[in-house]
Amino acid sequence: MAFSISTSVKPFHCVSSSDLTSAPSSSPFRPFKFPSFWPWQKVKMGPLTVSPMGFGTWAWGNKLLWGYQESMDTELQKTFNLAVENGINLFDTADSYGTGRLNGQSEKLLGKFIQEYPGKRMQDDIVIATKFAAYPWRLTPGQFVAACRGSLERLQLEQIGIGQLHWSTANYAPPQELALWDGLLAMFEKGLVRAVGVSNYGPKQLVKIHDYLKARGVPLCSAQVQFSLLSMGNDQMEIKNICDSLGIRLIAYSPLGLGMLTGKYTSSNLPLGPRGLLFRQILPGLEPLLSALREIAQKRRKTLPQVAINWCISNGAIPIPGVKTIKQAEENLGALGWRLSSDELLQLEVAARESPQKMIQNIFQTR
Image 1 (cartoon, one colour):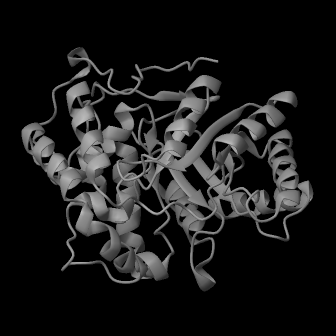
Image 2 (image 1 turned 45 degrees about the horizontal axis):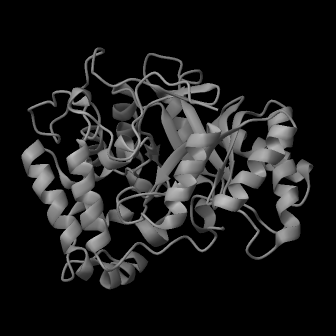
């Protein structure tokens, strides 16, 4: 099944010079708003129409990994408003985002920001993609429906854009897998979600759930996977090919490798917490890739994150970089409105393969 899209999606190394558009010459960190004629368009994702990049909200409520504090909420709301003003309408979250007593905080904040967005009713414009955790106690369709109603209450919405399974249980509890699929069906059939998707599903499980849902008249809208220049393994590329052939939209999470592709960190300047331990293992071997990113960024008058995110877009994926600040949102928005050339894509991919260390894959990722 072919995609119905409103902008051309190119396969690997097939972006021509005619796809390139002029980029703004001003600094990506200056407050701005794209004009309505900005040369990027929405894309189709199942029955939905979404921006070619979304924003992830994993950090909204997560103290352990991202250092969230409730004092950040004002900045987060301004960040949300800026994103919407500049055409972003896809926001990714999960019912498990938020640590400790802040569990569900990401959904609560999104709901609040949508309701308080100035001067416009947002419920019909914003597409929320939320993920439902495969907890051991979620074994029946009714339990998934109850979980979905909980998310709707936190989001203050009548219907969720995309209801997604957060991960598969095929690696550790195969008998639960069918319950997940039936739970996804139940949410859709009751009209609680407009479309359904999965996250962290490998090639084999992705085909299985696609066929299971299709046989019941429900299309699989999206597949979310760790997809970046740091995650170019065989499984990722096979998932991408399967998505293209089945008409499933690939959503790329961690397009900046948790921050390793921003160029902001070195072996002597590591982030605090668990990320620092991971960066210590991987960063020393990333110089070939970071060097290629710097070269292209300088030539393009872009930043490293903008080039890394654009790599995902140029390969037909919808990246969902996380944002916590207005500055991050402004920088990420600079990844839109232009495309890497086929030579630049090849240069980055060769450099990525030369880097000895790759991103550690999600433990729930299946085959």
